[in-house]
Amino acid sequence: MKLIVYVYVSMIVLGVQAWPNVKRSFELYPNVVALPYTEHKISDCMHVTSEPGDYVFKKSATSSPQSQLPTFNLNRETTLLELEAAAAAADPAAVAAAAAAVATDATVCGLYVIGEPDTLVEITMKHYDVNCESGGLMAFVDGWELNGEYFPGVQDHHRTLEDRVYEFCNNNKQWPRISNKKFFRSSQNAALLQYRIPKHGSFVANVRFHKITQPCNVLVQNTAAVYKISNYGHPRNCTLSAIFPAAISLGNLRIGGKSVRNQAKVNYDCQSNEDRLEIGGSAGLDSAGLELASAVCGQSGELGPEQAIYCEVTSVRLVSTGRYQNQATVIVRKADVEDLDIATLMCAL
Ligand SMILES: *[C@@H]1O[C@H](CO)[C@@H](O)[C@H](O)[C@H]1NC(C)=O
Image (tube, helix red, strand yellow):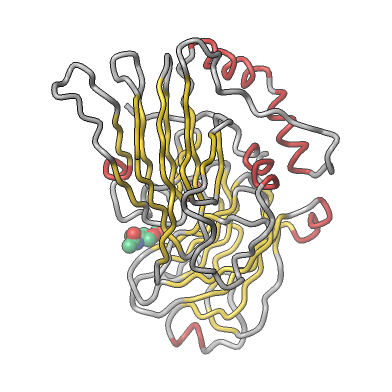
């Protein structure tokens, strides 16, 4: 059984704006981002964080369900995204479904962790008291899961989904009662700790980040940043995804073999090439559902034109056979209403 979180993807954008706006992905990363012993209380059902430290959840038998639907404040700077999110929230079916989930008290919640692009996430369960018998369950996910879809996409990950989702709970019938300290690592800068605690329970999860040298899949953390995407010569597909409509431009491009790289201009129509950089969007997290706006190959040191993708999720996917050293610099920023004239793709939002 998989724990699945049903929310509207656009809600995340609101969370993103609430993040501390202190670091940008292209700045040099300090070794220690914050004291690893900071204690954080998990207060929202969907809790998004990019900070290391201990995350504490506690639900006592008498307390009301901690999980609450995200609320929307329309007094803030009104953007296209927020209006969409508000519209999504106003969807009666969604509200009813969410209310029903709260009522049955079996809501699946999650600690969504996202780090700098060149990190992986480590989660250590310092303590957990989540009773299997009363329907309690926890899961570590190597990536993010939303509405049954995963980032990185199931096809593009080197591990199978079974290996990426590890479920656990306390079986109190078992003797001796052991609550082993559990230790997990993700394969990219995104990881998720899911929990369903119908009655009472608690856990303390420690979050840390570790540097990696050849990042492949990257979840975009900032609404304006520069990323490098490369296959480092390997046969693999790497996806950079932003959970918001985004304007994308490319620089330092080098994709494909000599014959394509020797052409005078960058080619934005390379669907039939094996090595290519796909730009597109989708309604969900899985890049398998990517609608293509352009497929790029060739070589150029210059900054290419911007294009706006109006989808819940914007992705740049590098498809590599391993025959070439492919690379690109990807400049991502949140698309606004003013960017409509550079739109290359509109998903049904
Ligand atoms: C990468 O994706 C392409 C199609 O999008 C697929 O044919 C190929 O097998 C994938 N390669 C790897 C290593 O998964």
